[in-house]
Length: 194
Image (cartoon, rainbow, N blue to C red; front, side, top):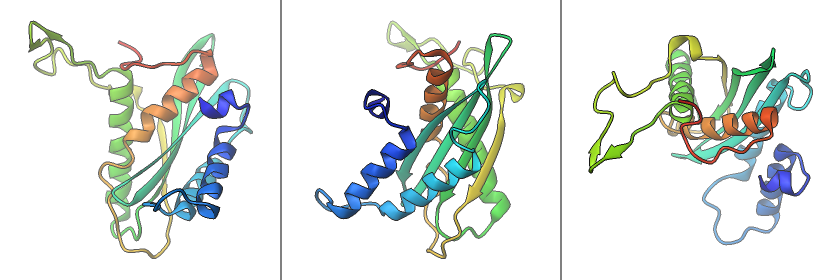
């Protein structure tokens, strides 16, 4: 939203801020700006950021946790006046990846879970008790709602860092930003759909 308000491309804006952090850090940096830049540039390249057809709307998000870096771009496709999430690109820097298929599956699972939480996850209470107390009343993402996921890793030779959680949080942000590009509406509360 800040990039939009400033009239700047969200990816270029984030890269500018990282460049400022490198040149003139405020306090001690607890992250490595270069690793952030690498995942951002890689996801932008893979998704052809800003160079897709006019019916594809891209949203960007980036996240750092457990000493790992994840950048994501979600694509919402508009077809016959209907919007649907068609693809998520996820680039992760978690150091050396020992088990490629296991790591990829963790990212897939995190992205799918992130979409499920953002779109459908709803826990409400009545008289202090949860209204949803089992999976028959708690909406989960369905198999046919899972988009294509492009998950890649940065091979940098650094000791392995965390992987289970870092790919989940940026998914909701990337999806919300893509929905905004498609509809012009900002979504501030989840779930986005029921």
